[in-house]
Length: 491
Image (cartoon, rainbow, N blue to C red; front, side):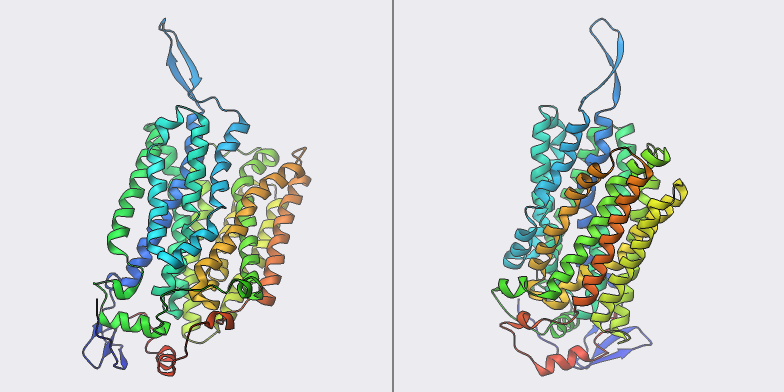
């Protein structure tokens, strides 16, 4: 639909907390009237949904293989698990998701840029939700059907992280990228916080099937609202105010490229791109090591059981949920006030987090005390929130039009730690001794440090020359972008 573009100069009204235009357009401070924040909240709920659909099986599989009371034909009671899967079968079931997940990262980024992030993001989660709902009856037919379902679910969810950048490339003003992107990403961590204890309670009191039925239904409900509310571009949103639309379009440069051509050779030979990839790989190596190996480490070395401590195991992810929100707002504040440049913010947040994560990851292997381990691991995971305000948003800085594809490339490589780290740990930990586990955590700390060095040397917060293709510099747009009155939260 055609909209009248506001050409008026913005004037900040500190008394009423609004930004007024000389043509009378006024945008309220209320966040629900800012459509870009509505998109951010729904993206948060989308990632929340994607993670409860991912984590559900990790909790439900315990109940699926637990002994339950049964009665035979003679009326005699006995206990037997509904599914008597051995450890190898359970490992196959739990890992099958990642085999599908790693295969569609690049495809998700490419499709997001081609047909719009809204469709790819929404449909990826919707199909996963539907497959989750039909899981209980199909798993009773064959465990291999469950494996196939999980692989397909991984394929569908693999598109989510990359394609969301296609949405932010259209909706996020440059100096609000950190807060909007981290708002969305934090839904993943909060989904883990929610799913672990809630799925455990549902499986215990309502049966393991309820986990799949309820979580799958939540996913379809979210998709309904996402589909009818969110648009790929702000100009397609009929409820957006003229003031907000003018602000977003002016800050982004009013580019109108109908078809995006990706400079593959230049992207794949760009040092800042590989700095982001290295940081993403390093963060995920530590994240997956902690996620998959901490319970085993506590059992082997500390003889500490986490059977009924879902809330405690969710604590690190709760910390990360809080930190990632704080870091996103802090990053944008430092850039808006010109205290630090974008490059300095990205490097400071990312490298600082990695250095401290190296320290606390190493301490995890040195402190053989349950409380100390939980504290160290909570701090280590929580500090990852600062790293996500570094590398996690950096794609939009260096190449906004190509950000979804760059995220796809990075997340493909960053999924490898989820497969490689457990295998490497299996080779190292042969006798379950503290010294063997110490090597595992030292390796993880070293990966963090290597990531910090590479990112610190080669990362950039400036748009790269190869990303300027088919773009023209507009002086008037540049002036409005640099106008401090435009870079406020009151629009």
